[in-house]
Image 1 (cartoon, rainbow, N blue to C red):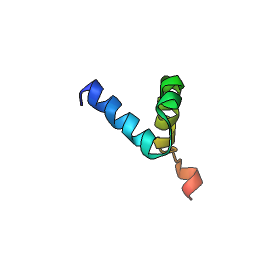
Image 2: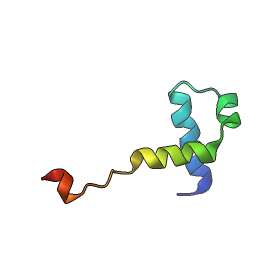
Image 3: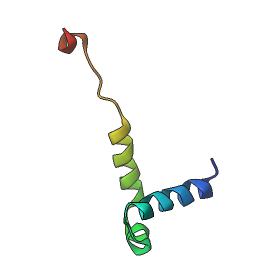
Image 4: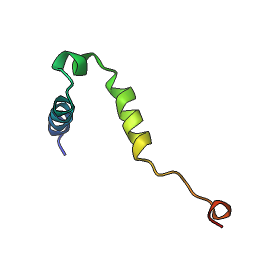
Length: 51
């Protein structure tokens, strides 16, 4: 995906959630993306926890 396409989709997604353009422009995008990555990661399970 082209970086501009990604940013367009990113902005559109946030706008649909009620964000405003100034809020998006002022946000710490790298921290926000870190949080999204963490949210998407699945917690690791160990066999002892399952049994």
